[in-house]
Image (cartoon, rainbow, N blue to C red):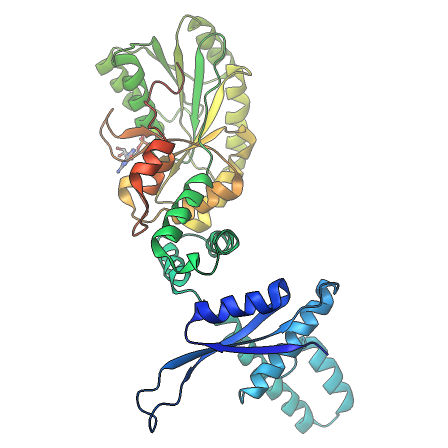
Length: 413
Ligand SMILES: Nc1nc2c(ncn2[C@@H]2O[C@H](COP(=O)(O)OP(=O)(O)O)[C@@H](O)[C@H]2O)c(=O)[nH]1
Ligand SMILES: [Mg+2]
């Protein structure tokens, strides 16, 4: 029999600290509730908190632990007047009960029971256990509002629970600052390797995300600003759909040479002709990212740029969560080294993007936040990412010291 415990106190903190000091790591809290303490005739009573659970046997296996959890949960719920059937899978229930019965009436009853059980399971699945620390509950809500994945949010909350004592978990400022540090650190930031010869920067991505505009911004920032690198633009239009005019116009305005190519040999030739350049920006024009064979065609064509060429994936910050992972997977064969997030000005919720970048361990290189060439682009940085989150409070000056801002051209020169 597992040993159960029940502790009361005047605050969550007090009870949790007492449980920790009495039972240490063996304590497994299963349930907590508030109990009005008796006052004079029911008046002036203060609220007490009661925590119940059982002591984990340090040697027991996970399976045994799980069955203990069920047992103990049932015992606690029963003690509180709730009657939850033992956890059994629906097929187990059906198999046992149908064998024992025969008549239609009995089968009807079993089916009703199954429906009830399904209903109960749905209810218990949709009501996660209450968060005992209000500061964490608030943070969790804030992360929901910013559209972070549920799994990402719970990994941050767990990391905070592991890092801080129960007393520190009551400190909102401390917890939110640390959460900001963890979020900023959950994404990596692209580091340019210095290579011999021109830097070849290829931008791929779905149609309309802002590839051409981003290429124009990078061309202007690098080619026209103080350092005046020798910049060339090559536009790869393998589908001859005539969308070259846009980039050619940018090139003309900036005095930067633009060449359009539509096959492997031409691209190879243009790269060779640009060997004196500092930076070769390769814009790609595609029809639809859903067309797998076209993606493959483009990948083969781009191999003409050689081994040192870097592919980057442009992703619009307005992309739906359900499409994000699909796009990242679809373009995987390009072996992109970073993601450029575009159109940040068009959304206020970027948690889903941070979650996806963190999951895929893809570095972030640039952020764009408007249509103006060249001003609406910046090197991605932890602080720029954090500044896009709503409601999270952190000590800015401290983080500014920790993460100095990078300048747009310093990334590669
Ligand atoms: N709001 C906003 N619009 C952008 C941004 N970048 C590009 N655009 C606009 O998105 C549209 C498609 O851009 P384009 O560069 O042609 O996309 P491409 O098909 O990927 O080359 C144009 O109207 C751009 O002005 C951005 O950061 N913010
Ligand atoms: Mg384009």
